[in-house]
Amino acid sequence: MDAVAQALADPIRREILRMLRDRTATAGAIAGAFPVSRPAVSRHLRVLREAGLVRDVQCGREREYRLELGALAELEAFLRELHAPSPWHRRFDALETEVHRVDRQRRMATAPPSRNEAKRRKETA
Image 1 (cartoon, rainbow, N blue to C red):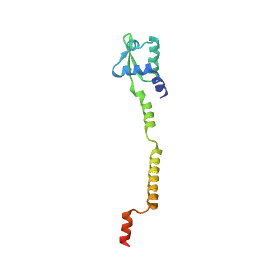
Image 2 (image 1 turned 45 degrees about the vertical axis):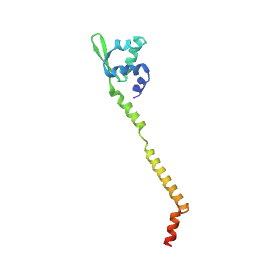
Image 3 (image 1 turned 30 degrees about the horizontal axis):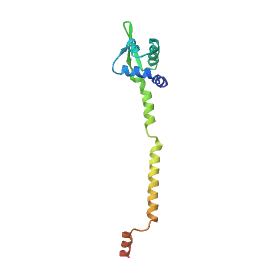
Image 4 (image 1 turned 120 degrees about the vertical axis):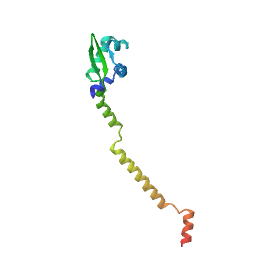
């Protein structure tokens, strides 16, 4: 997961992954899309390949790169875990409900009776 996160940290590598989302591309085509040198793009592709985010296939004299989404599974699971409510979330909600219930009971016990309640008490007495 660390290698994937590190590979995704660079904006050029993220853009390469976006390029490969819909189609495969040769190293030359990828290099032509960026204002950096071909060796720099080659290093970016190597980082992506080592992280398992892209796979390359030799096609004649060129290498063709394709996106590999399987490498993202561990990172996606980690992010889902972070987004999930913690076990404490439900406990704090239950505590908040109990505090409101006790507060309401306390207020009702100390509040003077309403006019209708006072009138009803007189009629039944």
